[in-house]
Length: 550
Image (cartoon, rainbow, N blue to C red; front, side):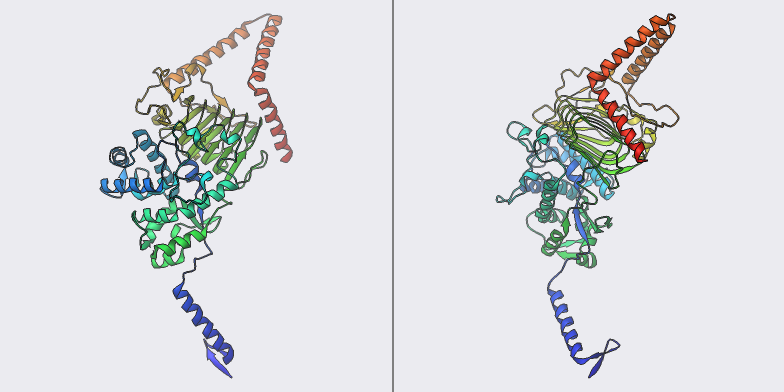
């Protein structure tokens, strides 16, 4: 026979089976939580690319928890100002930071917090600091079974030099797995996040002695500074807690169940953080642009109005790279003998493990780690950071000329402003084994011959860099320079004008031709000796290929 069920007539035999199945599923669901698999959680790679430091402290879980405990006891609230952070972290916390380290951590952590979760950078939650300090333990070379219950930061200095670190040698990236990209890095980072989820949960609940019983939705959302959730890899949701349906609906969840549910959902987002290397002629469509493993080549990124979230320039040797688009994060890692000419970076630009590299960038924040004989022409809003085993560093003001550079910098929120004209000249120095030169507040006019970490490019040797353009817009681009460099630039311009006047004053045609031939010969010699001839040939080839495509 038939029975009525839910407004329909259903055979009695089928009805019995359906009812029993419904009851069985209901009973099982009441005992076991199944994570919402329609969501994903992925690691924010930019936090590890730009927020991990090579300093004197070898962070471990025990040290992070000890530091947070003393920080919490000394602070009046969970939120700290910069002055409070520097005072407590350098005097009352264990382990104790030196002032340069405290300033460097604050600068980067506050920028990441503001960029990722939108909180103002003038205050930091103690728990966010703890989350970031756990990240300091990340090293892809140590993602293996942890038999000692501690993972330490191999980027930190060893007994003699940070070159003991796997990411600490400026030339190391030339011979081992790519730094910052590739399957080794991505799998290591996912494993690190899963292994340390329990520690992060203890930090967000401030249960530093044992795993908490419950976690609230507000506490779990704090992990949004290092993790992101989405219904797909290209559709992030506003709050991290939305990935865990039970937590999102009930507002609290047992800690053990939450940890297991989150660990199951953690993946690598290869849509947002692609590991594929871009081609010089193709315009990238992904959020990430990877320029890697180039040797004696020229890269020219054409669309100046493009927006790139993550630019990674990795393992390039003797190259010239132009990217004048708007960039959110830029990582320059493992490069040697390369010139990198950039437009505006709205958040952070980090140079890591580089040697004999020239970087030209206008960025909100700039960090240099383990760099040797590297020169940066810089405009920035916050003090640049020099850390790790960095030596032979030179600094100078931003010097890129391009007819559309003003628009690019405005789009990246780093338009030249007189208030920041010399911020580049006052770096935060926490270099390994060298004295702290941060607090000297040296003037550009002062002699820097006694300085060990960095020097200034002499104004007489300061020259602009002009980005090649086929169709420049009207108007002459200008540079915002400190007075000393501005005077030197104007003096050189007058010298060039004087040479022009002398050439024009030559009346004899033969003498004029001889003078022109002499100038052209010297120019050809300069092109060949500096490698500019090869660069010009590369640019001409790229231009021809681009025209064929269009």
